[in-house]
Amino acid sequence: MFRDSVKKLLDEGLAQREDLFLVDFEVLGDNTIKVVIDGDNGVLVEDCMFISRAIEHNLDREEQDFSLEILSAGATSPLTNKRQYKKNIGRTLSVKTTSDEDLEGILTEVDDDKILLEWKTREPKPIGKGKVTVKKQAELSFDSISKAQVVIKF
Image (cartoon, rainbow, N blue to C red; front, top):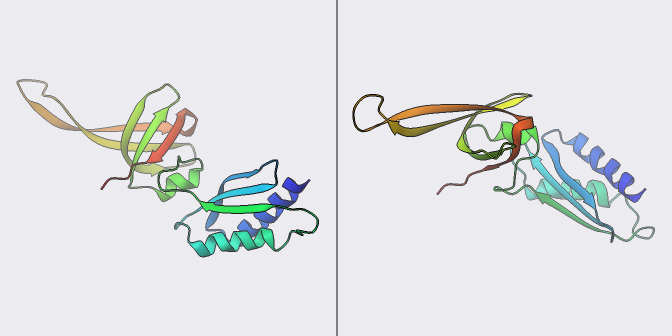
């Protein structure tokens, strides 16, 4: 019951801010509420405060004791929502597929069913000695991705 009322308040808060979306939500046994959000344009401290107030100001601490944590998805957190892929177009992703294949490439396209990764690799020349740079692509359905995260390069 407590979880349902918190989720309803969270959904109402997110409905007021269409640029924000839910990545993870849980209520632990000791009534610790953990919410992880992300945004199409990133997440500011003010965004976390907005969601916190949407929940906290509508719950009565006299009825239910709780603690509340509102977090933004970290830069290296795994991507779990299709909207997270769209906001990371042009960035390098590390992807592990359900068939245990590891890929790393630039995310160039995202639609409702799949993503497209592109990368360059050096391969032996078809004729003669030496190597040539070849552009590769992989089209991956969301169902075939077991884990994906942004690669931070310095």
